[in-house]
Image 1 (cartoon, helix red, strand yellow):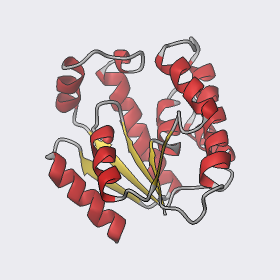
Image 2 (spheres, one colour):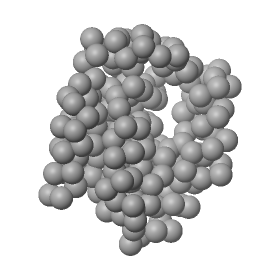
Image 3 (tube, helix red, strand yellow):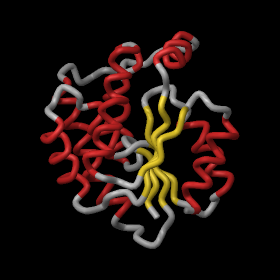
Length: 188
């Protein structure tokens, strides 16, 4: 199984991934960007705000996705792979590119290595505002609530258009409620 945990910044992906690491110690955990040597460099560049152009940022993510698909997903076909972000984030954050183009480019980068299941942790505008206000924001989070909510809506649209197997979870639920919903979804 290839499971992706998706959600906009501050949705609680890291917390849920930590729980999954305890429940599935034999699983292969990865992230996009950052699951490969090249991805680590891409992650530093993007979070540091080095790409001034949104198109350049998207192309960096696509390069990482292609490398990740080749190095991690395709090289481990019999593993339970759990990824912090993936193709849906790639499409969601490329919101200045028409949806059909973003989908096409991301599918090219995946080269057939599509996820088996996707969990999307969703935040309400109120909860997102509260969470962003409680922390130091990186270059993506600094784009604000409206930007991140547009990304979240685009993520939902991408999942529907691609007809991927997905579970939408209210990220304002308790950590244990979210964890249980993810566990139930994995076991379906």
